[in-house]
Image (cartoon, rainbow, N blue to C red; front, side):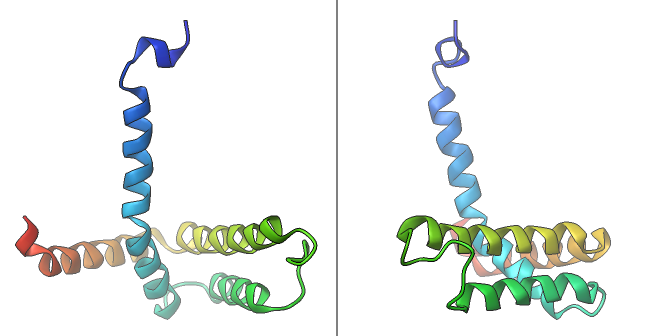
Length: 115
């Protein structure tokens, strides 16, 4: 018996997990921007993100967009996301924690009327 048959709510759990990920995308972008401005983050991590931006804007690709339209565009997005993840994971944990706490405080102040 598969796992989905055991748990009738597994589809709903997967959808909620995806919704949580989508909900946190703006916070992840805010965190990435804050880390790019922070002097405590190693320069090579920032350079990696800037290189990904240049690569995305560049007309030259590993998989050209005009040959494989969807896959070529998707490749640019994947490279950008992987570089942002490397920025967050490679940054000093105390710096990341400080920015995450600051973003949470900002969000609580901004959305205090919805609570």
